[in-house]
Length: 155
Image (cartoon, rainbow, N blue to C red; front, side, top):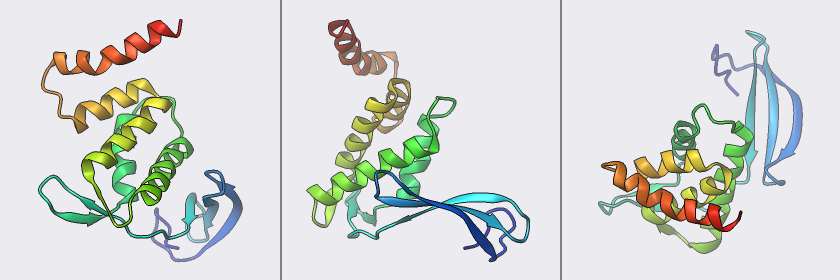
């Protein structure tokens, strides 16, 4: 494993433990070159589900791409990296369980938003505003109205 800081291919595993409800193994590593520590995750390689984009193009499911989008939505929110990884793992499990080989990007986005809404409503609205391409404040109000109504009912 190459160190993300100095690119040295010489490390040692400091700690290993089950993560994401046993779906992954989290490994804490220490680079023997620069002595910095970093975390890696080991997962079972699932079936390669293709994502069908709006223009009809197909691409492989990209864990990192979803994580980047979630990180932007969760910027300055009290959400840990482990929570983001858990959201992605749940989305991957749902996709592999419900779809054989292909899923529309629209369905993938909806699944991510559903999981994010349960985690953090502010991050959910941020993600939705980009994913659904909000153009003005009315789009935000339309998205928030069901959440506000639900909040009022639960009081």
